[in-house]
Image (cartoon, rainbow, N blue to C red; front, side, top):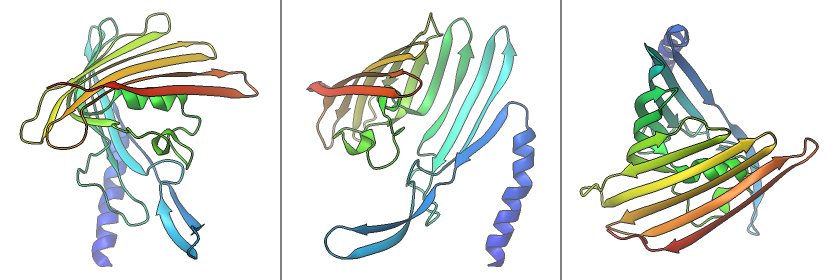
Length: 236
């Protein structure tokens, strides 16, 4: 118990310093709930994490380099609030750094959310949370990729484009990953589309996917629609 109290004291001591550091923001979600489920074999009551959204802790920041250029970074860890455990990779959700220019766009390198993630999030009425979310409906949920070089354009009259490339990693068994997406937002209208191709050398299908969707906000009701399809095999 003393060790736990000491660890908590260290976190509380560091938090004000991080929050006040120039250009650094500490953020997160703590989501825990009690569930009573019956699948026909009796009722099971349990404490679970991530009912609406996955619990997470993140650090993001930027430094103004002058001339409209900024250096930036994001580190984000997902965890289970009911057990305190994390995945095998501590920064499992995001871990990247890069440069951003108001005129030329943003270039980032590292472990990042894919264009597929950003596209499906835009047309998922559940915000990729709860039981009806897109993850539970799709057979393909490659939402994070390692070793990515990503470029995002500046906004042009409501349009933003993104390009992703991750080179082949021979040691990991994961091959080349390429992807791109576009989004258009004008008033209540939001349209999105993405394409991705993942080569898997050791297991699983190599696949290309295309996804399109969007939403329209009528103020009293908001409509969402989306479509995803595998369009062929990727090649090494």
